[in-house]
Length: 167
Length: 214
Image (tube, rainbow over all chains, first blue to last red; front, side, top):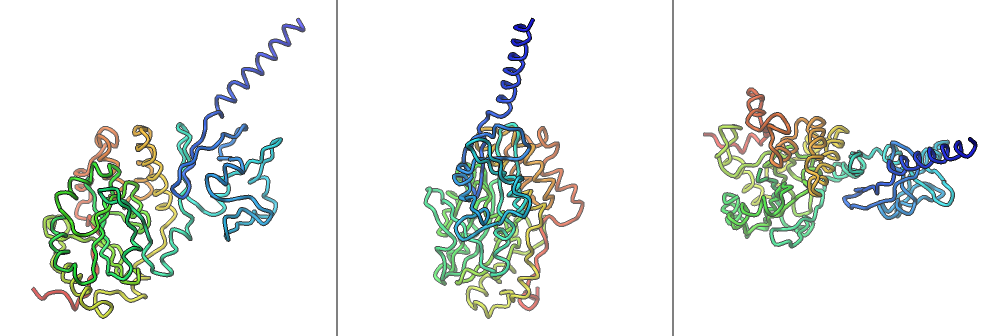
């Protein structure tokens, strides 16, 4: 009986582990500042997107520092008393909640659960930065031959920018 | 596009450039034949991700922005037709607008068509959060579509359309990638009918003094 009970418990544990790993073993895709990066899945359940601090740096360029979440000169302090919502240490791995960070900095986020893809849009101050300076937002795009052109290349000329579409 | 080539040819030696940007998820395959046929001397670019739409918070095509020698906006988003082919739909005369561009190219900041900083700031507004979310949903849909998950993209295209109902770009691009009636339960013709007299394009505010008297 004891042996049977042991196998039953062990079997259930294996089943639970299998379900858990099935739910979470999918690599996730993060699109951040237009760059696509595959990241490791978190080993725990969460509706939010948790990434390792290593993946955070790879996918976004941000690093966790004592003063906050930083990239170059830019630093967003973690609000007092909310560290656990952002950082989760599991044995040797430190996980970072990228969804919570997006809420903090008011980034729009769209996710597709089935394909495990997360898209992070620009922060409002990035999107709307040109309203203060009235400087036309720059872009770099290809022509039909694949040659890249930037709006900024045309400084010194008047430019009529026109969008159109084939559809 | 051939109309813009003729217009550009007239002004190209006056320190003036046209940058046309195709908002086309279909990329060179979709936009290329039109560009090839127009034989533009100006800069014709292809924007598969609709980046310019997002950066300038546009909702329609054709939309133009006038940018001066310092890279500053002097007229923000407004509808820009080079001829009167679609005048029946929007009622706007192309000649008035083209005359305005000529006036700006000749006279620079002295042109009545160049908006004051006050007027520019009145016309430009921060992107509202729903539009920002719509842009994120549209970008996610574009990624799914371009990685072979077109069926999964549909829900996100629909969400972008719901969040930014003013955007014809989000609607028409998504419908063009799909069987619109089957996947979206509508199509462009039906949606234009639903406008029921409301303008398809936001009306332009042009300088009164420069309107021809006819």
